[in-house]
Length: 321
Ligand code: PMV
Image (cartoon, rainbow, N blue to C red):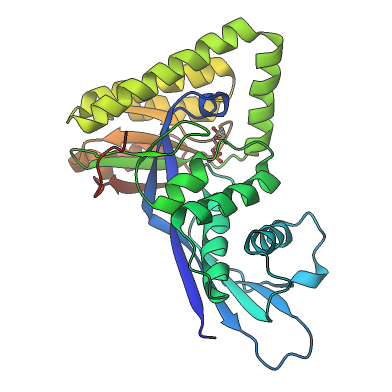
């Protein structure tokens, strides 16, 4: 068995996080300047089944047998094993390298789920469809996050901008013009599970008001789809800022994220918002390409611990209705 690798991008949610959990549309794009790669290397000659995980960033090694049942790696392999209906795995080393920061709203857990599903199944000789890989990754994400909408694993599996409604086939978006994003890290971290749970509790307590906010976010995603298919960068930016205001109303922003969003808006961005679960992680700003470097400095001055530029390119396929 030769070594097998899978390399997948990070992602960001341009519009609609949280609302997507309740069936409203959302838009996500792959971020190809960061990625996660898994490489499976056979370990022949082992007398018993040995599965070793190596984090090539830290050099840390873990044996599958030493992990508790709830560990992400163990849950992921169990899901893949059940999905493929194989009795056991051959001995193998699974090397993981990643430039996607973890718990930062940029898709690190979904990227791991997709890359493992793709590389392990391929290592075992299975040629799975993208749809199947996406399904496996979604199951793995459920172990991690409880009730994920599925948008993260979908955008990463297909590596295309996607208009997503939970439970429906993804619609791939034909973006007319590529555009430039600045992605700035607040340095704070709150697990997505916590903010999703917080929104759920507010929803149970105050359904009419929260539903009103989620509905407005859904409308924004719909309008953003049209703006992205046209060449309407100013509208994309304005919709992003409106989306941020609604996420703040929902209670998933915080002072640091608001400061970064305001700094971007005041320094020439078309618009900005938090992305992902919120209360930490990154903000995204859509910016004029020629202003990206100076805006980056503004955001670092405003307290971002890291900031990078990424281009969202148009994809090959049109929107599949
Ligand atoms: O924090 P992230 O990047 O995993 O994004 C979470 C997006 C939510 O809409 C809040 C949850 C979900 O499952 O879609």
